[in-house]
Image (cartoon, rainbow, N blue to C red; front, side, top):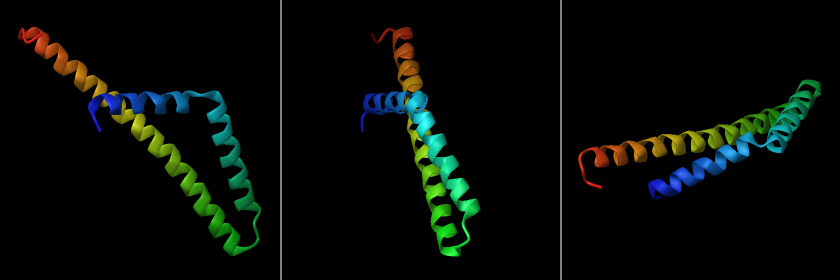
Length: 90
């Protein structure tokens, strides 16, 4: 993946994470899963719900990592561009 593609992906991830509808959906699903987990009387169900809660967190963490990587890559591109301009390569 090119640095430009990584920056684009980071921006798209930021758009999703900042979207109120996504935030509402994430919170609603997380809250429902935790409530089901707490109210469950069956050990197998609790284990499955615990896995779902963990997977939901992993999706969120992945999106945040993509966003952060894109931001870091964008800063690196700008740093290189500024350096090249200062030394007269552009």
